[in-house]
Length: 149
Length: 101
Image 1 (cartoon, rainbow over the protein chains, first blue to last red):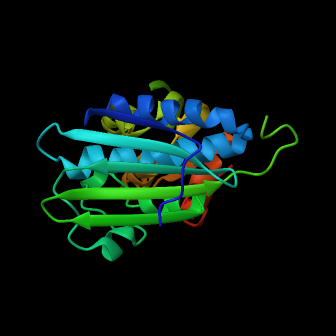
Image 2: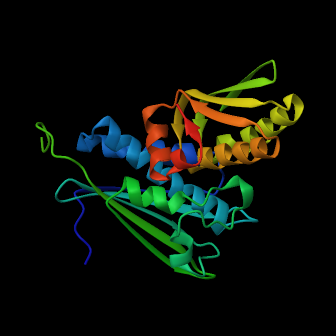
Image 3: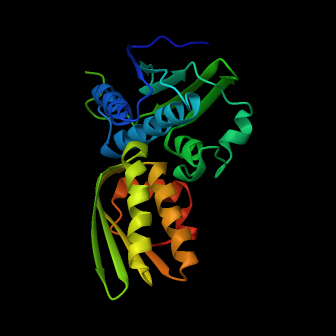
Protein backbone atom coordinates (compact mmCIF):
# COMPACT_ATOMS: atom_id res chain seq x y z
CA UNK A 1 0.00 0.00 0.00
CA UNK A 2 1.24 3.46 -0.81
CA UNK A 3 1.79 5.73 2.18
CA UNK A 4 0.72 9.35 1.96
CA UNK A 5 3.66 11.64 1.47
CA UNK A 6 4.13 14.75 3.57
CA UNK A 7 5.95 16.41 0.71
CA UNK A 8 7.16 15.27 -2.67
CA UNK A 9 9.01 16.38 -5.78
CA UNK A 10 9.09 14.97 -9.28
CA UNK A 11 11.84 15.56 -11.83
CA UNK A 12 12.24 14.45 -15.40
CA UNK A 13 15.36 14.86 -17.52
CA UNK A 14 17.04 13.32 -20.58
CA UNK A 15 19.44 10.42 -19.96
CA UNK A 16 22.61 12.49 -20.37
CA UNK A 17 25.49 11.70 -18.02
CA UNK A 18 25.81 15.39 -17.14
CA UNK A 19 22.47 15.04 -15.29
CA UNK A 20 23.88 12.52 -12.79
CA UNK A 21 25.34 15.27 -10.63
CA UNK A 22 22.17 17.34 -10.95
CA UNK A 23 19.89 14.48 -9.89
CA UNK A 24 21.79 13.56 -6.73
CA UNK A 25 22.24 17.21 -5.72
CA UNK A 26 18.53 17.94 -6.30
CA UNK A 27 17.40 14.98 -4.17
CA UNK A 28 19.87 15.96 -1.45
CA UNK A 29 18.50 19.52 -1.54
CA UNK A 30 14.94 18.22 -1.18
CA UNK A 31 15.97 15.87 1.67
CA UNK A 32 17.65 18.76 3.50
CA UNK A 33 14.26 19.76 4.98
CA UNK A 34 14.33 16.46 6.95
CA UNK A 35 17.38 17.79 8.81
CA UNK A 36 19.62 14.84 7.86
CA UNK A 37 23.15 14.28 9.14
CA UNK A 38 26.02 14.83 6.71
CA UNK A 39 26.48 11.04 6.51
CA UNK A 40 22.81 10.45 5.71
CA UNK A 41 22.93 13.09 3.00
CA UNK A 42 26.02 11.52 1.45
CA UNK A 43 24.40 8.06 1.58
CA UNK A 44 21.32 9.41 -0.24
CA UNK A 45 23.44 11.17 -2.88
CA UNK A 46 25.48 8.02 -3.49
CA UNK A 47 22.43 5.76 -3.85
CA UNK A 48 20.66 8.23 -6.19
CA UNK A 49 23.81 8.51 -8.27
CA UNK A 50 23.94 4.73 -8.72
CA UNK A 51 20.26 4.42 -9.69
CA UNK A 52 20.35 7.35 -12.13
CA UNK A 53 23.62 6.13 -13.67
CA UNK A 54 22.03 2.70 -14.21
CA UNK A 55 19.14 4.33 -16.07
CA UNK A 56 21.51 6.41 -18.19
CA UNK A 57 23.96 3.60 -19.01
CA UNK A 58 21.71 0.53 -19.22
CA UNK A 59 18.13 1.63 -19.92
CA UNK A 60 19.01 3.66 -22.99
CA UNK A 61 22.34 2.24 -24.26
CA UNK A 62 22.14 3.75 -27.75
CA UNK A 63 19.69 6.60 -27.35
CA UNK A 64 18.63 9.45 -25.13
CA UNK A 65 15.44 8.71 -23.19
CA UNK A 66 13.61 10.15 -20.24
CA UNK A 67 14.59 9.50 -16.63
CA UNK A 68 12.09 10.29 -13.87
CA UNK A 69 13.14 10.83 -10.27
CA UNK A 70 10.55 11.15 -7.53
CA UNK A 71 11.43 11.91 -3.94
CA UNK A 72 8.86 11.70 -1.13
CA UNK A 73 8.97 12.41 2.56
CA UNK A 74 6.84 9.76 4.29
CA UNK A 75 5.63 9.51 7.88
CA UNK A 76 8.27 8.38 10.37
CA UNK A 77 11.01 10.54 8.84
CA UNK A 78 11.40 8.17 5.88
CA UNK A 79 12.74 9.37 2.55
CA UNK A 80 11.57 7.41 -0.48
CA UNK A 81 13.28 7.89 -3.84
CA UNK A 82 12.06 6.31 -7.06
CA UNK A 83 14.13 6.34 -10.25
CA UNK A 84 12.17 5.25 -13.28
CA UNK A 85 12.86 4.87 -16.97
CA UNK A 86 11.04 3.61 -20.05
CA UNK A 87 14.13 1.89 -21.41
CA UNK A 88 15.05 -1.66 -22.36
CA UNK A 89 14.40 -3.22 -18.94
CA UNK A 90 16.36 -5.88 -17.04
CA UNK A 91 15.75 -9.51 -18.15
CA UNK A 92 16.91 -11.00 -14.81
CA UNK A 93 16.67 -8.61 -11.85
CA UNK A 94 18.11 -11.10 -9.33
CA UNK A 95 21.16 -11.60 -11.53
CA UNK A 96 21.58 -7.84 -11.99
CA UNK A 97 21.54 -7.34 -8.22
CA UNK A 98 24.43 -9.78 -7.69
CA UNK A 99 27.71 -8.06 -6.74
CA UNK A 100 30.19 -7.65 -9.61
CA UNK A 101 27.61 -8.58 -12.26
CA UNK A 102 27.55 -6.02 -15.06
CA UNK A 103 26.71 -5.79 -18.72
CA UNK A 104 28.34 -2.36 -18.82
CA UNK A 105 31.85 -3.44 -19.77
CA UNK A 106 35.03 -2.14 -18.14
CA UNK A 107 33.53 1.27 -17.42
CA UNK A 108 31.25 -0.24 -14.80
CA UNK A 109 32.07 -2.20 -11.64
CA UNK A 110 28.80 -4.10 -11.16
CA UNK A 111 28.54 -2.75 -7.63
CA UNK A 112 25.70 -0.25 -8.16
CA UNK A 113 22.85 -2.27 -6.59
CA UNK A 114 25.15 -3.47 -3.79
CA UNK A 115 25.89 0.15 -2.88
CA UNK A 116 22.20 1.16 -3.09
CA UNK A 117 21.33 -1.75 -0.75
CA UNK A 118 24.08 -0.88 1.66
CA UNK A 119 23.42 2.89 1.78
CA UNK A 120 19.61 2.74 1.96
CA UNK A 121 17.33 0.64 4.19
CA UNK A 122 15.14 -0.90 1.48
CA UNK A 123 15.56 -1.42 -2.25
CA UNK A 124 12.87 -2.62 -4.63
CA UNK A 125 13.56 -3.19 -8.32
CA UNK A 126 10.75 -3.74 -10.80
CA UNK A 127 11.52 -4.24 -14.44
CA UNK A 128 9.75 -5.37 -17.59
CA UNK A 129 11.99 -6.07 -20.60
CA UNK A 130 11.15 -3.64 -23.38
CA UNK A 131 9.05 -1.46 -21.06
CA UNK A 132 11.39 -0.05 -18.44
CA UNK A 133 12.66 -0.24 -14.90
CA UNK A 134 11.60 1.31 -11.61
CA UNK A 135 13.92 1.38 -8.60
CA UNK A 136 12.46 2.45 -5.25
CA UNK A 137 14.71 3.08 -2.26
CA UNK A 138 13.76 3.99 1.28
CA UNK A 139 15.81 5.35 4.11
CA UNK A 140 14.70 6.21 7.60
CA UNK A 141 16.56 9.21 8.90
CA UNK A 142 17.56 9.45 12.54
CA UNK A 143 15.19 11.60 14.58
CA UNK A 144 16.73 14.94 15.45
CA UNK A 145 16.08 17.25 18.35
CA UNK A 146 14.58 19.98 16.20
CA UNK A 147 12.73 17.72 13.75
CA UNK A 148 9.07 18.29 13.04
CA UNK A 149 9.13 22.06 13.27
CA UNK B 1 36.88 15.61 -12.38
CA UNK B 2 40.55 16.55 -12.75
CA UNK B 3 43.70 14.48 -12.66
CA UNK B 4 47.22 15.70 -11.88
CA UNK B 5 50.15 13.49 -12.75
CA UNK B 6 53.59 13.23 -11.13
CA UNK B 7 56.18 10.71 -12.16
CA UNK B 8 59.64 10.04 -10.74
CA UNK B 9 61.81 6.90 -10.72
CA UNK B 10 59.03 4.77 -12.22
CA UNK B 11 56.73 5.79 -9.39
CA UNK B 12 53.55 7.29 -10.78
CA UNK B 13 51.33 9.48 -8.64
CA UNK B 14 47.86 10.40 -9.93
CA UNK B 15 45.96 12.98 -7.88
CA UNK B 16 42.21 13.24 -8.42
CA UNK B 17 39.93 16.11 -7.57
CA UNK B 18 36.25 16.82 -8.13
CA UNK B 19 33.36 14.38 -8.57
CA UNK B 20 34.32 10.85 -9.53
CA UNK B 21 30.99 9.63 -10.93
CA UNK B 22 30.16 7.95 -14.25
CA UNK B 23 30.20 11.31 -16.01
CA UNK B 24 33.57 12.28 -14.52
CA UNK B 25 35.19 8.85 -14.68
CA UNK B 26 34.62 8.35 -18.43
CA UNK B 27 37.61 10.46 -19.40
CA UNK B 28 39.57 9.66 -16.24
CA UNK B 29 39.53 5.94 -17.09
CA UNK B 30 41.16 6.61 -20.42
CA UNK B 31 43.62 9.16 -18.94
CA UNK B 32 44.73 6.70 -16.24
CA UNK B 33 45.46 4.04 -18.88
CA UNK B 34 47.40 6.53 -20.99
CA UNK B 35 49.42 7.63 -17.96
CA UNK B 36 50.26 4.02 -16.98
CA UNK B 37 51.20 3.05 -20.53
CA UNK B 38 53.46 6.09 -20.86
CA UNK B 39 55.20 5.74 -17.48
CA UNK B 40 55.24 1.91 -17.13
CA UNK B 41 55.49 2.42 -13.37
CA UNK B 42 56.64 -0.08 -10.74
CA UNK B 43 54.34 1.58 -8.30
CA UNK B 44 51.15 3.50 -8.91
CA UNK B 45 49.57 5.73 -6.27
CA UNK B 46 46.00 6.97 -6.72
CA UNK B 47 45.50 9.96 -4.40
CA UNK B 48 41.78 10.63 -3.85
CA UNK B 49 42.36 13.51 -1.43
CA UNK B 50 40.56 16.06 -3.62
CA UNK B 51 37.56 13.88 -4.49
CA UNK B 52 34.33 15.55 -3.30
CA UNK B 53 32.04 12.68 -4.35
CA UNK B 54 32.59 9.11 -5.55
CA UNK B 55 30.23 6.29 -6.56
CA UNK B 56 30.83 2.83 -8.04
CA UNK B 57 32.37 4.46 -11.13
CA UNK B 58 35.40 5.12 -8.91
CA UNK B 59 35.53 1.42 -8.07
CA UNK B 60 35.64 0.56 -11.78
CA UNK B 61 38.52 3.02 -12.21
CA UNK B 62 40.50 1.58 -9.29
CA UNK B 63 39.95 -2.04 -10.41
CA UNK B 64 40.99 -1.13 -13.97
CA UNK B 65 44.19 0.49 -12.67
CA UNK B 66 44.80 -2.61 -10.53
CA UNK B 67 44.48 -4.94 -13.55
CA UNK B 68 46.84 -2.77 -15.56
CA UNK B 69 49.44 -2.75 -12.78
CA UNK B 70 49.19 -6.54 -12.37
CA UNK B 71 50.06 -6.90 -16.07
CA UNK B 72 53.16 -4.78 -15.41
CA UNK B 73 53.97 -6.74 -12.24
CA UNK B 74 53.72 -3.50 -10.32
CA UNK B 75 51.95 -2.37 -7.18
CA UNK B 76 48.96 -0.14 -6.58
CA UNK B 77 48.18 2.01 -3.56
CA UNK B 78 45.04 4.08 -3.03
CA UNK B 79 45.51 6.86 -0.49
CA UNK B 80 43.89 9.92 1.15
CA UNK B 81 40.41 8.49 0.66
CA UNK B 82 37.73 10.91 1.93
CA UNK B 83 35.04 9.46 4.28
CA UNK B 84 32.23 9.26 1.67
CA UNK B 85 34.46 7.51 -0.87
CA UNK B 86 35.75 5.21 1.88
CA UNK B 87 32.20 4.07 2.68
CA UNK B 88 31.67 3.29 -1.02
CA UNK B 89 34.87 1.21 -1.13
CA UNK B 90 33.94 -0.56 2.13
CA UNK B 91 30.39 -1.36 0.94
CA UNK B 92 31.90 -3.05 -2.12
CA UNK B 93 34.63 -4.83 -0.13
CA UNK B 94 37.37 -3.30 -2.28
CA UNK B 95 39.79 -3.27 0.69
CA UNK B 96 40.20 -7.03 0.18
CA UNK B 97 41.43 -6.53 -3.39
CA UNK B 98 43.37 -3.27 -3.24
CA UNK B 99 45.73 -1.67 -0.71
CA UNK B 100 44.05 1.40 0.75
CA UNK B 101 45.83 3.74 3.13
